[in-house]
Image (cartoon, rainbow, N blue to C red):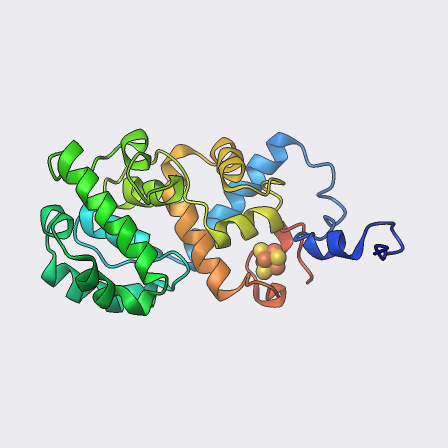
Length: 242
Ligand code: SF4
């Protein structure tokens, strides 16, 4: 079937995929130094706007945060926080979870969606932590991402919030969307977006950067329609509709 094209010559499908509008005048030829200065300014604004920004997943230790983060895939943090207290009461340690029957876990996490896959990931992760790490959740990227069901985003959540180290930037859907709208990255894939952010933002802010972007993404810079008229970053944002 013949593809329909827009006036600019792009296909309608390609136009629909374009997440970020053209930058406003003044941002189009921004130097690397100017982008770094703009990033510093917008971080300051977000710190002022969300002074209590933090990880929204309830947890008491690395094990609980790792489990909660695995459960948070395709699910809200609120819903995860409703499910985890009963789960942790029944399986308070990695060893308890590794020994669990799948049906028991499925029943406790059913409300978070994709519960069969998530149960497989949880039991695989717990077994691996019990066997390879004596029941202690490892704290480095390579060991974490070697666990079943644990990708770079999950590992960054655990390293940044449970172990309090700035080794990377969590790139979820909010962080990716804001990074693109704010023209801090033109990349589409999370690993490249993370790499761009790590070049722009001083290391001590890497964990907080994700929290601030997530808060702002939920409250103001929403998908699909951002509330630019209410945005504290409007004058610093190349995509502002204000
Ligand atoms: S000005 Fe609009 S697009 Fe830019 S960060 Fe704010 S809400 Fe998002």
